[in-house]
Amino acid sequence: MAIITLTTDFGEKDHFAGATKGAIYNELPDVKIVDISHSVSPFSIPEAAYIIQNAYDSFPKGTIHIIGIDSEINVENKHIAVLLDGHYFICANNGIMSMICAEIVPEKIVQINIHDKIETSFPVLDVFVKVACHIARGGTLEVIGKVIDHIKPIKNIIPFVNDDKTQIIGSVIYIDNYGNVITNIKKGFFETIQKGRSFEISARNHKFKKTFEKYSDIVDFSVPHDKRHDEGRGLVVFNASNYMEIAVYKSNPATVGSASTLMGLNLMDTVTVNFSKI
Image (cartoon, rainbow, N blue to C red; front, side, top):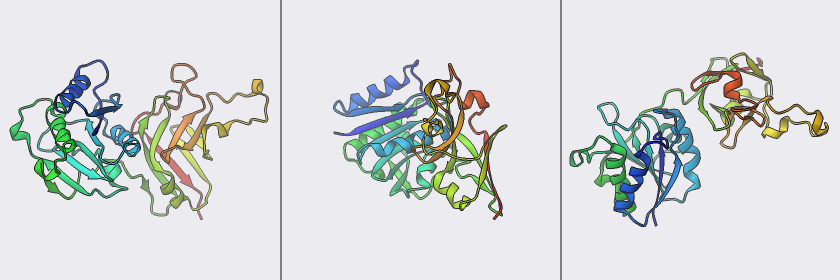
């Protein structure tokens, strides 16, 4: 039985997510549909790229992933279907796939060309669903598109490194439900530039000189519980996806605050790492 996932910026208020599911069930009544997220910030390509990169490989090979972000077709925003790592991705060619493709080479990319057969102002429902159901039935990508060899890159996917390797300039690509701030600096990349040197991470006027393996590492458990004051303290971790994350211990944006609210960090803000000179 085929699995189709949905990642969109539709939210929960409007009919878009429900209508998309209905259209899929209309064609494939026995398919399984999984919502990855409908809460991507409107038109936020970096957010969607981060979410799908970190969710897709939890699904079985052969899963079909519909990504409905900035999907209106125009001369600069074509639609693509990508076979990568045994999974199928259907989305606009607007950079969403470049974060995954930077680490894994696609097996096949096609530019979808069935639009002349479909009249639509809602391409996720009318085009992406048709393509997903075609694939779920065992159809090939060449039937619904023309093979191409590259995709549009996403801006700010790779952090900047200066010539003498003493500084990394990254950016915030995602803010999670806890208000933790995820940057585009991956652990392996950081360690390659670091080469064991001391460092200072700067985010606005906040500075950090160490990273932690997990959030609770900031707690000194030898101190009696009633004498600890760890909640609300800022820290830096490399998260489960190996991205540098600026966090607040046991954060809650509505109560103790979060890295985003307390430090004033927003999407695409700059995060700088300065290393000592060799």
